[in-house]
Length: 240
Image (cartoon, rainbow, N blue to C red):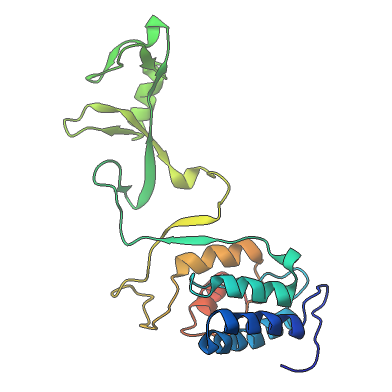
């Protein structure tokens, strides 16, 4: 790489990127050097056209992750890195027992009892009795309201489960998104979004990235565009 390019607002440059590439060649091989040159050209161009408010996501495995981090620091500036997201791959639901899907909605079972010293909360309700020092968290009237609303999970014999208060996940904002993303399943062989491209990313991985870093009407760019999954995700979310 020749010449010198300083991306706007950063201390990155082509010479800094070349230093990373040369270090990778000495520590790894010419193959790693060629790969990083291939990536550097794209990263430099993306940095050039990126808006000051824009974001850049780079998906990679641990084979070259450390070198790519250094390369991005060289191109964009070390202080521009906002962190790393780990995609914890899953191939299925690992729960052998417990709560699954009800009408397509996920929920968790919350405890209907609590440490309660009031005798008014110690009673048998629809065949279920609070145990020991733990009384019902709700009055009998409130339990009946939850039952009528279909918010009580029962055992196989029809008796309410003590941890059977259904809390639907789509009704609660939940905790702040962390940097380990679970519940993102690989694209199955029979999935509708399957294109049979070898490195296709699932829409469930692309959607939150696009939502978190752009607004409807913004521009999204995939400089590789292997099977257009990122473009499809951006289009259905109202990005250009």
